[in-house]
Image 1 (tube, chains in turn orange, purple):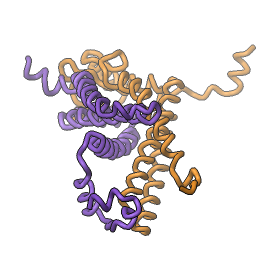
Image 2 (cartoon, each protein chain N blue to C red):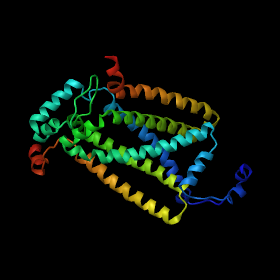
Image 3 (cartoon, chains in turn purple, brown):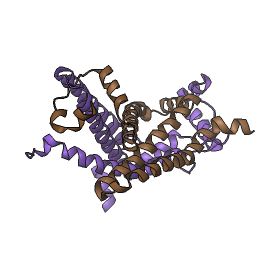
Length: 170
Length: 147
């Protein structure tokens, strides 16, 4: 058989599907541990009620949302994701890098798979071009949206400023 | 039909008709051995996970605002979403473990063991689904009936 270029044969995609796949599994274990397992990264019922009470006094909109029943009570034995803890975690640069890697690998792996499926089932050329274009637009929108969320999330701290850095060195 | 497919020279001439209905018929015509079953579930769970990824990135737009974020989180804690979370875990667990199986076969050449590996994949998926899924659904579907 005549040898084809790497790009045409899809060897690059095949190989990196495996590399990113393994990376995602490793990242996913960390993600699952902090987001879904009953650890300190989540709040139990008492802590949730405490945080809710504090936010109620801090933000008038929060109080209004609770009164309208949009922010619900915790169930017995439930462990909840709270804004307080998620932002505290995401203000740590290590977690920012972790999540950006998760985002990039996830998008690459997921949409590489979608392109494979398009290759398998859609043969009509105009339809193919249309669907592939829409998919690329979607990928870029998700990448921008996701990175913005990760980069901007966290406890807000005013920019340090060059004069403070220089001042701190003396 | 089977002869036609097995002969590579003839297979290329095999009439392919495109379209969603035809694609669906083709999926039904796949041979249902362990490898093929593994592949179909892998593909379907993959599509499900990409749809979830889109919803997830879109939902986390609310992360800049505590009020919006907790409203979204409260919506995610409704019984329907909790059930969805359990299904999501099932998809993730199967897709990752079967993915590891694929990597083992591709990288280490464990083709001889592929059927046994598939049985292990299913067993390990179910085990992890129960272990990881219990804390997710217990406060909604199990604890209320115990108290």
